[in-house]
Length: 611
Image 1 (cartoon, helix red, strand yellow):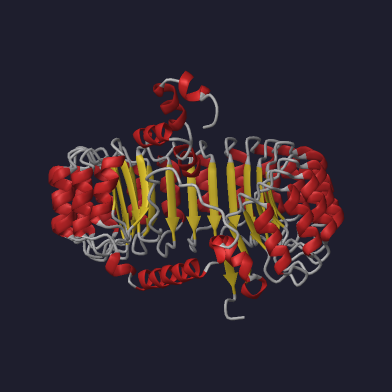
Image 2 (cartoon, helix red, strand yellow):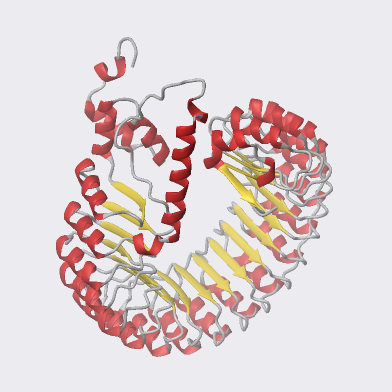
């Protein structure tokens, strides 16, 4: 710092540490660590979480453990690139007229690119293995939360070593790892405080290892997740029911679990609050027991059931009076009667999602509107048999509704939206896609009555036009807007949004053929907070409009502009040079000049790379 350093001379370390702890985003913390050596040291001291890619060596874990002394959570994900926190403030770059284009720097870039490609081709061989996990355990013995996502080289040997040294572990996520029974048994033996266990896609685990862990940690386990593990059967669920009396959350996605497995869980785990199931072999018999015994159940999610009918739903409605969150997806044999039973029995419902349940129609949702006055969020996806009168009842009875999702609901139109807008004035998020009967009239009513609306999405709703956006611009202060594919929207509608929504941060106007440079110019003037912009397939937008927007919207972080014939390499260069916070630009490869590639190649993403 130049001149007098008032911050470091005035603020004590405790106060700076507290400020760092209140920073929510990693980029903000990283930026603070680059201010000076004192801040770098304090930021390391305050950091409790590391999130890194799986291609990391044991030596790097040793280095991290020396730099960050208070880490309690580590997330290692094969899908992430290696991104380690900075070692020290970035050195000052010497500026020279030819420094960026010198032969030596060019050759270094080529060598670096070659190394990058080589690393990408050998991801699995470089992935975190047992030696790395052992080094992690040695460096962070006080670890409480560990996630190893898709780390195929970690085996039971490494997990045994880790479990013995990290006895304070509370949460373990092994999604996609090939840890076997011995590794799980070690976790059950040594990790006395384990509460949360995720074994999704762990193909090496069988009943033997799972039961050993459950028996060892029966007094602490509260959450279990199992998916696509063919060797975990009803025996494991019977062990859960017999030993895990504190279990509150259970996620099961399996073709090997039958009624007796779920019944055992229901009989033994009377504290169960959250139950998510995708088990094709379960029938009404199991859900009758769940309804009778799981009286504390608050969330129920059922996916792709083939043998579950209204009988099971009646049992849930009768017994689970505390149910607040219900998701029904692709449950083909459920009808309106089953949903009516839930509505009549579960009056505490705050969220309902119905996805692809083709036999649930208008009467079932009407019952929700009449009985569930606390409903806060409603999602209807691919519900062809639900009509206007259902949402009219929602508008009358659910005054607390704040979030509404409608996808491909052909029976819902403007009359329904008018009822929702008049009755649910606290609506904050409205997402509509391919509901072709909803047009200007319904959205105008939303703009008139729902003053708290911050997110609006009306993707591919052919009847929505400028009149709707003018009303939204006058009545709502939007932060996010998506009007992709609404072909009746022109510059007039976007102009109204630009004038009325100065807090707008996310905008998608892709596939709109009636908007041009005027819209971008007005957005630049009226929406300086814009961060994400999608304008792909807009044939009338040119470099001129893009230049106006880029000069004003300096906070822009993401811009998608593929298949815009009026945008050239000059427009791409303008976005890159004018927006210092830009992180992603999606564009055709042939529209990016060599200079732009040199200047900002890391933020450019290409579509149709062979073109």
